[in-house]
Length: 330
Image (tube, rainbow, N blue to C red; front, side, top):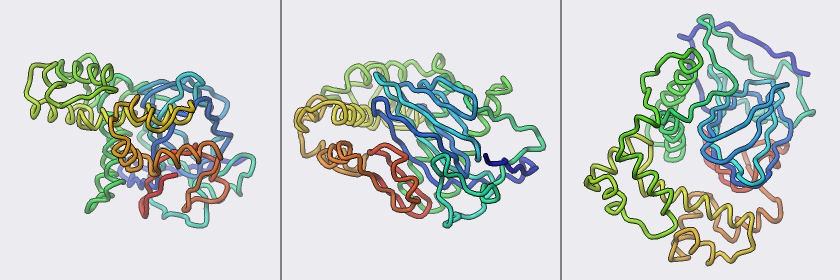
């Protein structure tokens, strides 16, 4: 077993480096085998349920939960059979130490390397409190921050690295203050969401399968479409129609994996009345067209060129991965 290295550092020394971000899930009963991470794994459960095992501890995973897995700790997880989770994840170091091209991002247990190859885990002089599991379902800021990292890594706008660091530091701050029972700077809760946003979000979730317009959704809150879109994005981190597409594609992925329905039928059931448009949107978000996605799921094949061979069966087909250097989807 790895003897975990520790390094005493000050909060002032934190210069986080985000190595990978991604999103996966929606696969019934999917199992992640015991594995060891070289850097920190941070993930946010967007929907569904599952179980996460870290060391000797076991946790339920539910929407809104945030997990932080430290280097050198044995980790495994299993998605719920009936309501499998979907989650966004970030792999990072608190202090930049390069990309370590000679090391895989993680390794399946028990193929554990020599302990000297594992990055040290920071022990903060100020006693930074970062538990394995944080219940953040009442904190919409978390959704915005993870979405911010995801968008920046995807688009790679000028100086996107600075934006990614800023979002990650905000997440760390939220987790720390939550653990201490201290209100954060973005202490909104679901109960204090603007009524117009809460009403619109609920309406979208109940009606995303049919044709929707921004004006129709905004009317639920008796506001203009322009105002509704602005406050919705400011509160939740994505536009109303972006949320509609996210829900439709997630439903489509579940139907492709768990049913034998035709792609045209799935497109229609997920709210797309044009199969060509559905395929185009699906490929843009997931990385492959629906037909290819089904083939990959059935064959069990996947690829992730910038990770070591041990990782190729580590994530379910359909995972979206963005790295600092390049982006890949499999």
